[in-house]
Image (cartoon, rainbow, N blue to C red; front, top):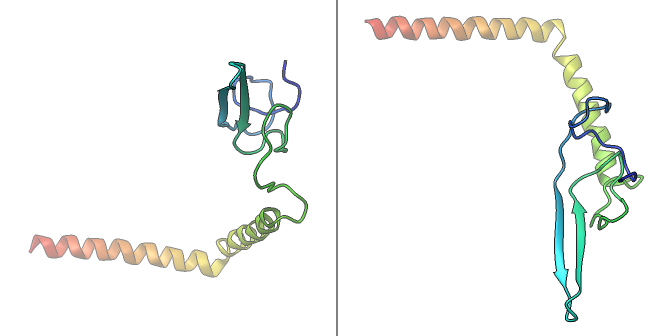
Length: 116
């Protein structure tokens, strides 16, 4: 039984967290002495880690402290927070309503012109 990680693949309703599929790979090999072996790999992280028993390690460890990935993930999170804030300002909501009204008016005008 596998106990190296906990991951919600969506196969067990008792598992918590977001459901996420994963891509697994197995390479079966045979040496010159006709001995069979294998190498296993997984794409992405499992259980918030990306190094696991019996799987080859990642070429690039994006979860390393201070890695480019984690720094930029924080930058993207801050951008998302700012976008959410801006999309809820009175000015934005007013301009969005005006845009929708003008778009509808233009569509109506085009329909009327086509009838002529």
